[in-house]
Length: 396
Image (cartoon, rainbow, N blue to C red; front, side, top):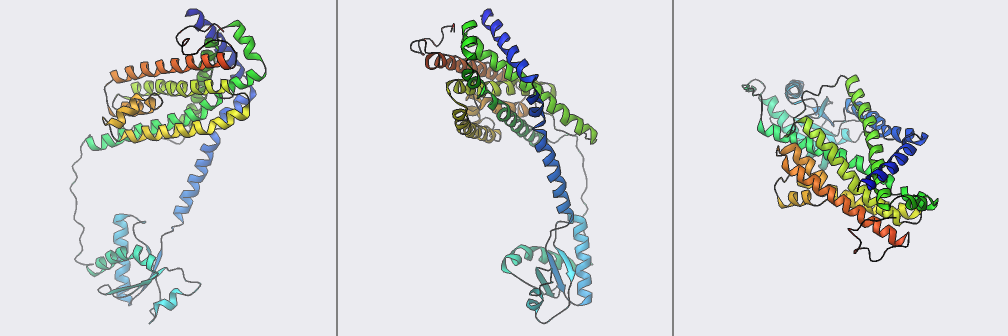
């Protein structure tokens, strides 16, 4: 066993050095920052679009005193409910036929409110009337009861904690952790698919197999890719933290996970490692069977789609703590890391995490073992029935 781990560390150091010290690794590190920059750009564009105010415009065709009452009621309501709560209003000339005014090309109004606050008449297209009728009914009521309309003051009683708000915040933390873990796993694990294909093409794998066991080759490559992933995560996380600090972000208002932030972050690292090695060992075994890069690319899509289904299953289980679906998501190895990190955000019990990590690690070992035996049988053309050799050490 010690010889296996020693050989695996040699393979891991070789692969890790070859990847991290290459020029393409710098491009790999900078690659995920591009979507972040695009996100900031689109966020600024969204704010700009919001600032232009895309609310519908309603023309007010009433007598001057009624129009003034509508204006005052609109101002009072929007101050209380927000600028986006009601459509914009604009004074338009009083005409016997509001339909004619709506048909003018230069008109910006989508509907016209005529009559009086006591008997308002709204003219416009049916779909616009459906959207605006309730808002303008409220506006007319507020204008009609202008003097008698008084907002009831609400007495404030502040508390330090709210169990409902705390549960909701922990649920959000669990969901965010799931999404980040899934994104990083899909982004980083796919590199393993083509790893063995390149070395098989260059006949390097035969040289390695002659020197060390195939178990050590598989385990070493998985360890190297996991270490490379942590380098990337450290770089991206440090960049995100620097941007957050430069923008004056304040993290004191974040909800605290049930297990506390130190344990939660430690579990997040462990569960990411498990999710990565589970998917990575599967990718490694499949990539070892593939003969060409084209086969790898063909296999990548269905595996990714399957992983997305697993993620959706784990995401569904977040809202159903203790349900059969949540228990099944915690037991099924490929969804277990995502379900358990969400559980850590909502439940302070620690022993299930120890059991889950041991279970996930055992399944990683099983996948690697099956992949090694299939590789020896179909690629190296050695070995008998693979299930008979499942728990027998592979020697190369």
